[in-house]
Image (cartoon, rainbow, N blue to C red; front, side):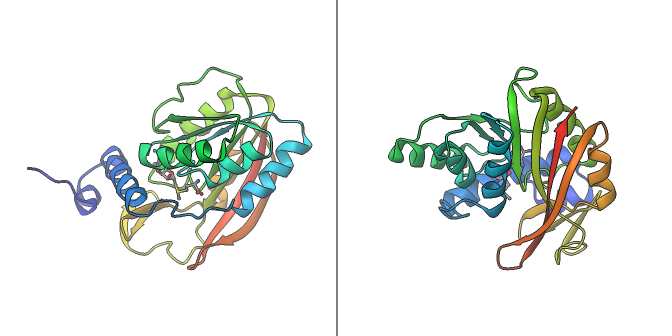
Length: 229
Ligand SMILES: C[S@@+](CC[C@H](N)C(=O)[O-])C[C@H]1O[C@@H](n2cnc3c(N)ncnc32)[C@H](O)[C@@H]1O
């Protein structure tokens, strides 16, 4: 049997290999730690729900929803939510919880954001992605994903995303995969520079960038809000 390790990916593999290894890692992590991010919504989700509600958004596409702490918050708040991730284990935990609470307006779908989004153009009022763009994605894949998000948003639609940035304590530590991707404890993270955030906002209206922290490290992140022209 041939097994591929993260170290192999670092020394000779490409980002596709790393992404596949990461998918297996997320699957086993969620299997071992159900609801690992807790039962309550994240701070960005609470802010995003307020922002989406204030502009009359009704439909939300969530990318990298995991076990759905935030998707559940949006659905409970009355939004129609399509929660997606490349981990079916995480999404199964989300569906079990949603069914247990009889939450309405929530669907799930397996989507790997390294490929074009399998969704129609101009079909969502808002896209939400908490700590998804900063996963093991190359800069090229992230740029392509933001173009895809632009395509699936309605004109005037909002993208709310969060990313770990170059001020994070883990930036520059662990296994260096290149392209500002560093791996610690099996989790590979693409740390964002401010210049990269600005580049991703070209052709959009950049509304706000806020600093925040999450978790014990703490992880240091930006939340970014930009609207489709
Ligand atoms: C840091 S976790 C955040 C989960 C969730 N947003 C939250 O905050 O509770 C990142 C999530 O992105 C997912 N993910 C990583 N790479 C992905 C990819 N290429 N396509 C889709 N999901 C991906 C992982 O499975 C994981 O659920």
